[in-house]
Length: 74
Image (cartoon, rainbow, N blue to C red):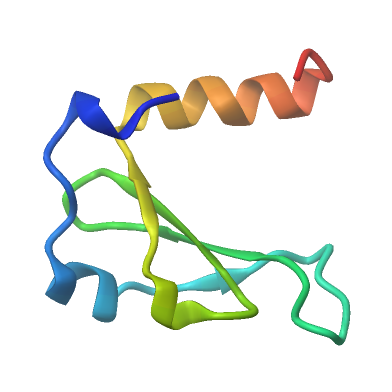
């Protein structure tokens, strides 16, 4: 998966994003958050330090990643 396939999300889009914490996260914030952005891109950030920013992905590579995780091929 690469971030180079589409323009990066604007900072305001990330700040206004509806972030969702992984249900696999423990109480120590040792996991990730995901947001589906209005632009169609997907963003992922670390719950331990949200100030580090987020990685953004175009829809097609994101869906390929999700599919690979679900079917166990990753």
